[in-house]
Each structure stands twice: as structure tokens, then as C-alpha cells.
Image (cartoon, rainbow, N blue to C red; front, side):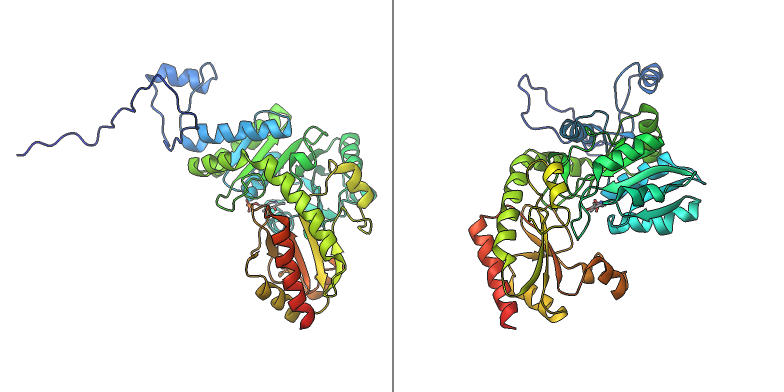
Length: 393
Ligand SMILES: *Cc1c(COP(=O)(O)O)cnc(C)c1O
């Protein structure tokens, strides 16, 4: 027989006295320990070490620590998607018989979870307007355990009464969970302000390049953190090491991207406000926004990178706009480095009836813009050119 080396045996990673500058990518799912005693030490917390990828891995921990620093906490958990962060939090903290009060304009899948999935497991929810703390309070029942809110609603960009909601949660002994995806800790430091649990879809602004799907959970109370973590491990909501590595890379420029995108959004809101194709601009930085005063005190001196507008006309005007702006991705997401346009009537809010959408002010001519980091002159001229095409008909 010809000579065959043992290719199954792994080749040791080369030693180096100098260290890599970049975080190594560690895709290993399993970790080998010297002996069962050492494994005992790890599981009992006497020694630090990884065991199995679903329970945690170094690339997730590096990313978690970076987002921890942004939110001002520690012990964050990175999960495989924003929705898995919502799922682990709610299923970890609630039991059959419990009740939630949720914002009435939460992210679409979160709304579905509250109204259609959780009830199958005996957990009920009431939706209420988070811009009106009295409405939130009126929705509380003796079984209510938790409040779930987003600071800025999608796509109408209403600003929740966070100070009122934080006070309400404290007074009534409820767990306050804030999905801080839209605002990010720079727009609103939800954890520092007193939320018990903060959730992110890292997929959006934090990772920032539309190439990973990830979530994040930060819990203040150690018992709550453990309950959420155990649910996360049991349900297998593990993030991929590669995605964590990519998101870490994206996060290094988050500060600059968010700053630039917010400045661009403010400039764009001004530029389109008086355009003849536009019936209304919705932007928290404008004096005509219903929550402008609250946005000024809440949003860290800027007003976010999201802006919405309503075109005169219906679906035809909407089709004309996206066709006339091929440089701007027409895509149902947000937080990308580039500007994206979304059309709630045909995407996020298509499950609602026309009347349901009308109640929220979402017409066929309604667009949400996630403003990106393009040079503002180019972005402005692309959008104005598209609006001109809509106005011409
Ligand atoms: C996108 C989004 C989610 C869900 O995140 P995924 O990463 O897509 O699972 C949750 N909440 C908000 C506010 C979002 O925008």
C-alpha cells in the first residue's frame, strides 16, 4: 500500500510571538478540555472556557462586549437575528398566564408574536399607544409582567414617551423591555435610562452593511439574564461566528456612519419638504412633527436617520418613484450604509387592511427612507430627480 498521512488529524495553528491585530475568526463548534475535572471547572464557573458553540463562542462574545460598551452595560447576549432576541427575551421571562403590554406600532414580526404566537402558549398581550403613557397604563392588568416598546415607531416615526414609560414600569413593578434598533444607544441610551432589558436587531444600523442577520439582548437583573440565556441556548438561537466577525467589523465605523446618516437625513428632509410631488414629510426634526418637542429632549440632539413621506397620488406615483430612482435600493430594510427606500403598503404593512393602514396614515404613496452615508449632494439630486419624475406623471 502506498504511504498515506493521517489527514484526519488537525494541524496545529502556527505559534507566533507577534499577535494578529484583527480579531481571529473562530468557527469551531466544539472545544476540547484536558479532562472531565477541567470540564467541571468550566461548567461550575471556576475556570473560563468554551464548550459547545450553541452555548457561546468567542466571536459572539467579542461582539457582545462591543455593544455592551455602547449601551453601558455588561453580559449582553448575541443571537442569530433580531427576532430571536425578541423571542428569547419574551419566552425566557414569561410563563403561561402572564400578560404583556406592547407598543401598537412595534416591528411587524414582534406584533405578530404578541398577537398570534404567544397566545398559543397562554401568554396574552394588549397593544397600546406608547406616545400616550395613560393609554399604556390603562392596558395594564393584574397579570401584566412586562412592557415592550420601541422608541421610534415604524414607519410613522412617532416618539414614545420614554420618561413616562420608565416611570410607569418602576411604579408598577413591570419589566421594561426596549427594542432600541431604530434609535441605537447614540440616539437613545435605553439601558442607561433604566430599561431592564434592551434588544437590538444588529442586522440594521449596528452591523450596517446588510450582509449579516444578528440580534442582541442586554438584561440588568442576573436572574433575568440567566432565564433569557437558558431559553436562547435551548431554542438554539445561536449566531454564526462569521456573522459576528462581520458585524464586529461593521461596528468599528458605526459612530461615523450614524453621524453622517443623521446629518444627511436632516438635509434631505429640508430638501424634499416643498417638492410638488410630496404631500407631507414626516421627520422628528421638523417643527410640524407631532412629537417634535419630545424628539428634541429624547434623541441626543439629532433626529435619527429615518424619514418618511407621503406622495400625492397612489400606487402609480409609488411605482414611478422607485423606477426613477434606480440608484437607491428599493428594499424593505433599514440601517444600511446606503440609502434604502421602503414602501410599507406593499411590504411591512401589507398584512393590514386598507382601513387599518389608513388609520396609521399609510397610503399607497407612503415611503419610508432609511438615509445612508452617500455624499449629500448626490443623494439629494437622485431623490429630487425621482420626485420630479413623479410630479410630471
Ligand atoms: C428588523 C427589526 C427586528 C428584527 O430583526 P431581524 O434581525 O430581521 O430578525 C426587530 N425589531 C426592529 C425594530 C427591527 O427593525
